[in-house]
Image 1 (cartoon, rainbow, N blue to C red):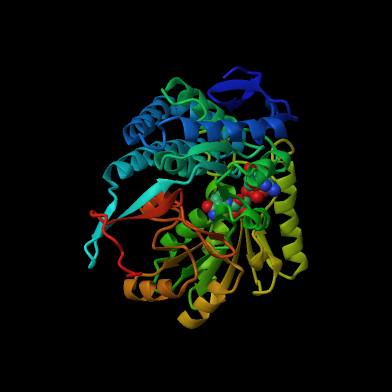
Image 2: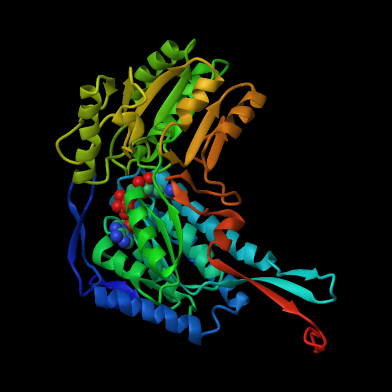
Length: 483
Ligand code: NAD
């Protein structure tokens, strides 16, 4: 990558014709890099390049070429893992040990989809009338892939790998806030033999860059991860032309702790579920529901443990929580601390830690009620609420009582109970005595206003395919209808 060229179209780096953006490090607010973003015209040019590559190259039909590319890309990223992890932590503020895992999971994702398309075979059905049918999965065409700032590389690859594996061509738009890891990955892609125009990257704001991708008539599919409000807008736009769309949106996920759970272990899961990646995780377990007999003990232990979390420099191996992504999000998160107190909740932790960088201590709100904004709205930071419940019925009611349905967790020694409760939770992922792990072979996505469609696993691949029924009569006889 040239330091001045940040737009990748048709296999060539270009200088962006759009806005200039200065990226700063959330740890110390120092400038990391200045980016020349794409213009609307460049974005449209990228869509045209992807369309040309889809129609004029053998990418969509040459599975061998695709598996080879995905495996070489995985090898290339693996070889540059340390550098990419450092870029990710500097740009996002996430602790380095988390970025290392993100890069590993990115590599796994590419290899998984390479393996999956090798195994995929069309379904063959013999019909009663002597004809036979093939059920074929074909690529959709040009896919616009748009992702948020919290897991720029990993969430990007959850879309890029299956979209390319399925034979589509891609225009990728990272968040304007965190484009740096993907730029490094494009350098790696660029060194591999990939037909020009198959993969393009445009940087910039939701408007004009994201919006141009979504509205362009040559874009066949939009796969979006981000906030529910943006998702709603994109869904409305896509509906006008009946464009294919997948949406991975926000959440307000509950973690249910039953009275048979070992308390110290349960509190560690509460910390991990709520504060991993500074709580800037769509599936963060930001609502903790605890059976009333153990509620006081859990709250006491939680208050002690949040004081012990090592908040600090993301590049330090011992750091357990980094800074919030940027000034405006920091103000949003700390604004909720004020709001929660005004609403009558009791706040523990949440202190602002230093002048430079966007650092705060993890926060817990107790004495909350179900209608409070801190219980209902996605804060997307290290802020959780804790509420007691009486029995399973009340736990399920409280857990399901938001507009979201992305994930949930159940902590209990009684696995039968955990499964029974889990089956009643309206969530795309339910973890029992576990949390946060996005198993590549499984699925990922939301009920209710947390999204439409699923990523990961075979469903993540099928999201980038159209299904064709090809019916064949081996002899050309008269249908005999108008005899
Ligand atoms: P956001 O919705 O503001 O932005 C997401 C992306 O959409 C960015 O690249 C942005 O530039 C782009 N965008 C904005 N407006 C657009 C438009 N009109 N047309 C096209 N693109 C547009 O979200 P964010 O603040 O970057 O990320 C935080 C949100 O993402 C949270 O709500 C979080 O829950 C959600 N998220 C969901 C998942 C999931 O898997 N469900 C994963 C991570 C984050």
